[in-house]
Image (cartoon, rainbow, N blue to C red):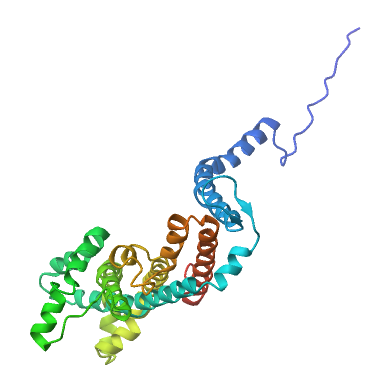
Length: 313
């Protein structure tokens, strides 16, 4: 008698099921992108988030640089609200921001438009000439302008006397003249740098747009308004916001040229922070001023981003 042994067929595998090893491999592959971008976030947290948190904590303390900080709460912020020096520094910084946004940015755009003119000779030479101030050391700039604005032997007073008979002006000792001189240095140093951005944007505007506008009878001013400005809007927005941030944090020019003087006539908020921290050893007070500046710059930048549609498709 023959015994037949029947083997049960293997259980069918559902098409939607995946073997366990393959699932583990899939999970490992899903974590790989995060491993690649992790170094950036680690460095960002270490060099950005951690210092901001430390500044926030320090602004709530009283610390002279040695020993342990003493927690004082919001006392530093209350003192800032009644500090006339801080209000003066804030007003001066607002003036520097106005100079950057009202004079430097439009001036850079106009210069870039002139350099973009067809048939302009020595265009490369003009580009280099306008960009030189930005690559010069701030110390060199301060020395040169300090000699040019000298009351007795400065070139500016010599030219004014030769042309108009103007008596010698004490450019760096008079509050109004010191602000005017510092504003001129800001314009002279920054306008060439921003011109490079605008010039690159203008060269990317399609020539067909200008030809179409010219066929419609648009003149140079009309073409500038209807073709050029809309085409370079993203670059204009970028330049506008970055110029605001740079002017709000201005330090080199007033520190090297006038030391914030005469008195506090050219004192910026960044210089106020420097003086509080490294001249008076009020590190908590300086941190509070820095936090206020950070909040104001961040808030205004966000408003400008929304108004100018930066980062939107």
